[in-house]
Each structure stands twice: as structure tokens, then as C-alpha cells.
Image (tube, rainbow, N blue to C red; front, side, top):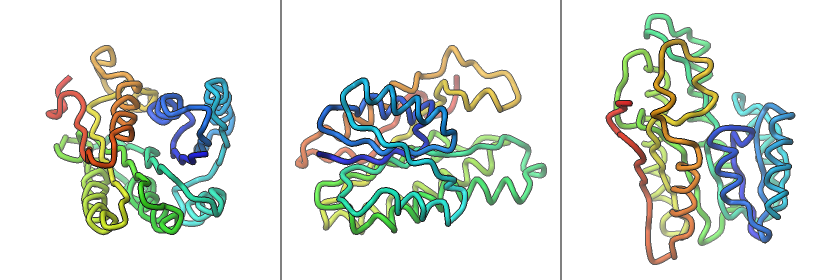
Amino acid sequence: MNRFLITGASRGIGRAIALRLAQPNRTLLLHGRDKEALEESCRMVSEKGARAVAVAADIGTIAGVEELADRVGPDNLDVLVNNAGVVYVEPFEKITLEQWQKTLAVNVTAPFVLIQKLNDRLTRGASIVNILSVAARTAFPNWSSYCMSKFALEGLSRCLREELRPRGIRVINIYPAATGTGMWDNIEGEWARDKMMPPEEVAEALAYALERPSSVMVEDISLGDMTGNQ
């Protein structure tokens, strides 16, 4: 049975990915912090015939990432999806050091430590998928901490891709434009939610990349308007 780990799977893009990947021959380890929402994701995945396992952890701390890695267990992992993320939208002079460090911890350090801890469980043919953003390639005013984190994760991804390629492990980067999730509920301002792509489009792109045969390498997928215009 294939094993998948999806971080940030309690809602939004992570839940959409989990539902798209759910199949009877798969075990989906679903990570999140909101236990109630996570259990709902597990229920929805189970209804599609997959085995769903909730793994709640706060990956904003090294201890939380290590706890998550330990709970994955010793068995091989076929797919790791780094989707969890945080965002603060403020003029750069108003970004607090705590917000900056939290963004770096969740969006960059957590994927790095998780990949490092699970490295020996990723066998030939395994895939690491990093959910990046238009913000990994385009700068936006008031998004300095978020853009920083996505630029950094892209750099890490490209280095890991070259290091892991000889082992037959794929590192896939997905760059969604603005996606209609609950994230926007906590960001001040007027956002054209009706023009944003649904999370299911991100999930479909991820599934497409994973389903390509080993002879077809799909490493970067850009979705939507990469200028960030709505």
C-alpha cells in the first residue's frame, strides 16, 4: 500500500489534495493543527476508500516537526507534500520579528527538517511536492515575509532536486496564483475571491505530475496568472 504525507491537510489546498489522491490502495497521513477540521478531512478521505491517519502537530517548532516525522513511522514513504504555510500581509516596517520568524519556521524550516528526517524513508521513485506560489517568482508590496519564504523554499527545492535526482526521487514545485481558500478571511483588504482559482485545480496539477511515468519528468507547474493580477 502506497503511503502519502500531506501537511496542512485540514482545509483548503491540503484537503483538496488529499481528496484528489485518495484511492483504496493508499494510506494518507494527514497533518494539521486543527484536530476537528483534520478529523473531517480524514472522514472525507476514508469515504473515497483510502486509509486516512490524522497526525496533528505544530510544525512551527523544530520539536513539532520532529514529532510529525516520528509519527510517520519507519515504513517507506512514497509521496511527501509540503503544503502547510502561514502568511502575514503588512508593510515591511510593521512586520514583527515574531511574525517573520514564524513565517520562516513554517514555510521553509519545517519542509527542510521534514525532508531531512524522512530522507531514509524515501525510496527510488518517491516524490516530494512543494506547494510554492506566484510569490516565489514575483514580489508584491506588503507581502515581504511571505515572498521571502517562498523564494527561499524554491531555492531549497532546486538544490534538493539535484541532490536527490541520482536516487530517482523527484522534487516537484507547484506555483499557484491566488487560490480561493480560507486564508483570505484573515487578510485585510478587498480581494477578488470570485476570480481566484479553486483549490481543486492545484490538486489536479499535483495529481497530474505524480501520475506521469518515470520517463516523463514534470518538475515545475505554474497555475494561473503568474503576474499576480486578478
